[in-house]
Length: 220
Image (tube, rainbow, N blue to C red; front, side, top):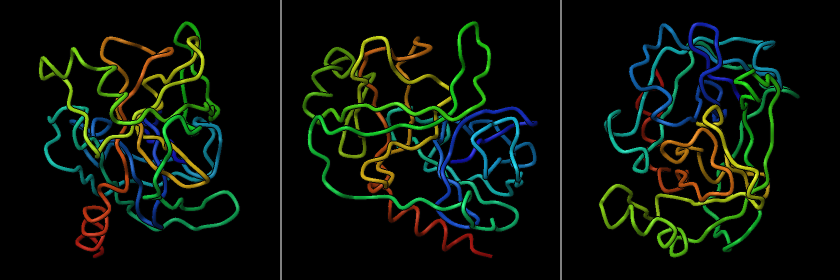
């Protein structure tokens, strides 16, 4: 996990997938310049990072202004390589089939009550919602062309109605069996936190070719 920060303040979460590469959500970096962006690694506290690394390239998939439910994924290149160790490691991502209703885990930083920051990483167990059930949950939005759900998405929902994801978790990982399967990319519109609702996330394996090509093209 990393805390993606703008001018020293937590903006979004992200994951380490290479010694110079961070995976996050595209909407986290809309209208952000690399000079203003850095990541904190090696800590569970977004305000007390052991190591800060500057970002020198922001590489979103497609248009920065595209829909949050489509291609909401981005890569950040660090100005200098990370030193891997006990507290700084990369995560693998998986293309494995995930059964409907399987238990997944989301990690990231969230804000507490009265908008006060909770600086420590939080975890939440959620359930996978298969594409057909996810489309049914969004039937009205799909009919009005506000939402598109495809194999590029992975839908999840919390097991309790008083639990859900909040905006600060954006860019963080959805994890299954120790590997990342999705990037947290959408909190339902007009909701601060999605208590008990179904969320549409970005399935990482769908973008494997783009990830590998982008890293190769920016390895200078």
